[in-house]
Length: 161
Image (tube, rainbow, N blue to C red; front, side, top):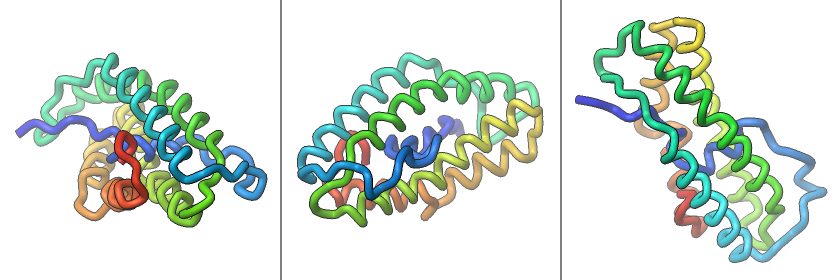
């Protein structure tokens, strides 16, 4: 059975890669539906760009040391695309309704993003065991990506959830 390298569960997860930019109190308040529309547009753009990065052709159920450079390269190519999304999402501001949920969504996905970063870091260092563990954690049921995706869908996001 083959597994795709998990992109962090859902796209909003990428918002946590560089941490929140600026303070939440300083972020402008905008209508929730406007935030949803803009976030989904940013995520759609991310999906388009991320699809242009070829996924590594590795069997994740039988991961070998020779697969690690491909994983590291893939995560490295996605990194600037993720940073762009991070800036866009954090630049949206706070919704006038559901601000706490929006904050929770971003926070949940930060954990999932850390797992993706751990995959890339471990692969770059040639650590097969750490790479396997990071991939297994990112695919575990009930992990940050799954929780964040559920929150995002409940919030009204489509392309990001």
